[in-house]
Image 1: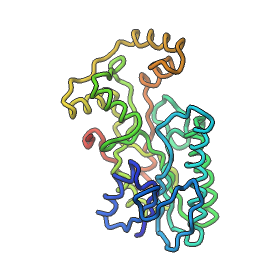
Image 2: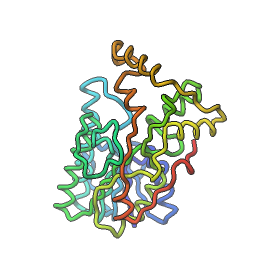
Image 3: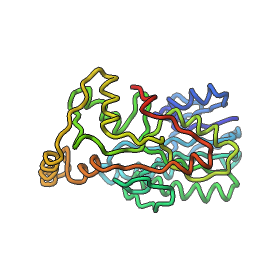
Image 4: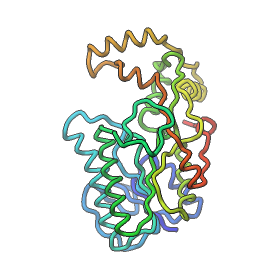
Amino acid sequence: MKILFTGANGFLGKNVIPVLRRKSFDVKTLGTHSADFVNNITDEIPLFEERFDMIFHAAGKAHSIPKSKEEEIIFYDVNYQGTKNLCLSLEKNLPKIFIFISTVAVYGKDFGQNISENFPLEGNTPYAKSKILAEKFLADWCKANNVKLFILRPSLIAGPNPPGNLRDMINAIKRRKYFNIAGGTARKSIFWVEDFAELTASIINKDGGIYNVCDNHNPSFKDISDKISKMLNKKPAASIPYFVALLLAKIGDLLGEKAPINSLRLKKITESLTFSNEKIKKELDFNPSNVMEKFQL
């Protein structure tokens, strides 16, 4: 089966493409450099002369907070307009299957437990809004062109050299500047990056759908930080009492955005945010890896 993998030079591409090839998929890559097709998806992409059986659309913008209107627009340019450009470029030779990497951020939840695919899409950040728009566009485009659509909404993704919040935690632990709060008992859904290849193989003969993507265990902040500390040969992170963190958060509320912690951030790291993966396990016969068993730096 021939796959076009977009965002080939990103975190998913670097970790998933080698596994797909070991599984005998014929993978062609699209990226802004070092790819079979070198294009920026925010620009118009030339029509592909070959047909792909499957599109794995992982190209997108994430892991940053926009500081200006111009930076906000980039999310829409890449995640929404880039997706439209990609689809227009495929209309001469339509694929059978389209896999879109969305995000659990579309739900707009900072805390909550066992959030399912039936929850409303209330994400209000430029990242979440741009992904919601892309999801809606793809639903219409795939239906009009008889392409099976799989929208995958991953939680925190773990793997070698991860980006985002997980990378920040690793760097803080390296510098001995990471602390759990109130024992670090809050739980977060997490997913092992290479499992996207296993999931791709599971999708081939299925009918499409929208799925949360995470493992079964929802480790706590302490579980994750202890695992990282052990791999770095560091002592486990100390814990700050909740009342101390609350005092610092109240001060942060007064100081504004530059403060390292405020009441909202405190709530995010002391309350659990977990997602249900029952639908993906049942409908796609998929059994995710235990991230804490596989996790490596």
